[in-house]
Image (tube, rainbow, N blue to C red; front, side, top):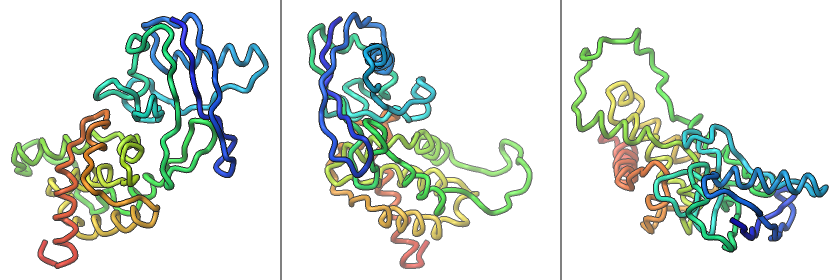
Length: 248
């Protein structure tokens, strides 16, 4: 396959940046999107051109580091998949592909396609954990938890914090991410002790980071590689209201 890439190049957060065009030659349909970028970068280095900077780590759809907007869609057009899981067979020979970074005020560009998503880390540090002493590991059935709640907590815990939800939302809202982390603990007995404090601190930090509000566009749910459900936002809102009114 021979492809044309329109890639966003930007030196740093202060640089204006712009699109550059590159050719991707002899690309195997079995390559992942990141492997294709590796091939392009090898060619650029050979020509004495600075390679395209992009983020990656596990390349197994686990870490969420591969944050790229491909043809206007965070992680590309493969449903429920990260960029590293997107195969080049999803494109046709001769296609022109536009590659951009995740765009949000709270995700400043580091360089080219790499963005700083440490805002998510600060939200987690604000309250996304259990700090009470729960003792040793209990027996499997020592703490009764309904299957419905345990399944819900596990579904929420599947969030890998990649930021695709923010990149897809016209408001750059982080509510799907935050609600998944809040719901993960809110449905477990160990997490209920700090539930009110947790949701207030995490929401406050989310607002402080400059993320927008949710206005129910559902784009976040549509692009999430782990199919995190938007209903978690509803639970987070209920947890927040209970915390504010003292009815929790």
